[in-house]
Length: 95
Length: 245
Image (cartoon, rainbow over all chains, first blue to last red; front, side, top):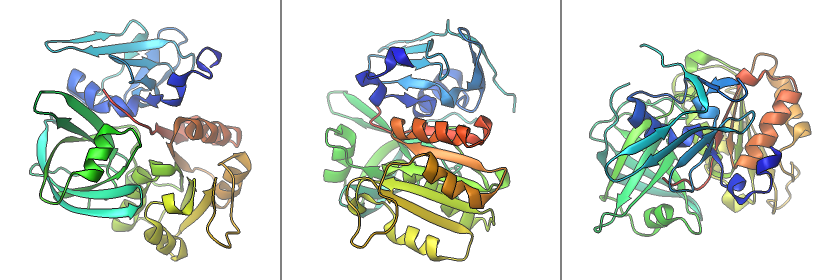
């Protein structure tokens, strides 16, 4: 918490729900209700609970427990970059 | 999930909710039933290709077939909300995709009791839950705790008053943080642990809590609910604010 306290970004912070459409396009499925585990602290929770920073050239999703970066997405004209080093797993349900 | 493609919605009606919020009723050529709490993405494309995209929660219940209501609060520097408020008229077309989201959702079969905690325009997805509860004939007890800066900023005022007066198992508790209605005897502070304790007691054990509003309100309320003994997995949160991708 301390790291981001008082940060202007914190007041504008959203959560995984706000990028559900973007993530749905990437994974081809709704994922905000799916569990994912933070590779840093081991916390497992729904993607919708991740802290989302969207006022940037891309989207940064952080763990709601330890606040380390879990995912980064950057959309360009021809491609989308997805970096998920901070995610230990993402559980995609078969329906 | 079916692929979510953009579609051109037609603005069928526009209704002012208060001086800064309007509800846009959109007719969708490829309407699908949503779950209360879900949102639609809306995008504006300028002739030069510049795009602006925002997410807006659905206010109507899925029982309203073929149309969705999106309630949009005008933000001072909001390029999309200013356009919707100042320029869009009935008959215009808007590009949307949805319904979106699978976490901050409630369906009647999930039961309750329901504790809904709203700050500002965070009341919109919670209103969809209350409307669906009624449309589906659900009997789960529900309490809405709603924080507004002033009486003028309250959204769905008449409907909330009617809901709170009814005998249907819904209670509405409001708090005003800056100015209060004349003769107001209710809460006049931000949502805190004591207020949450008071509203959740009558609901009994096993409640489901949904908290939606600005990030500081969401964190304060969710943390207080945990301290009051609500299991974290029974608390769902959605942070509202100016979005943009």
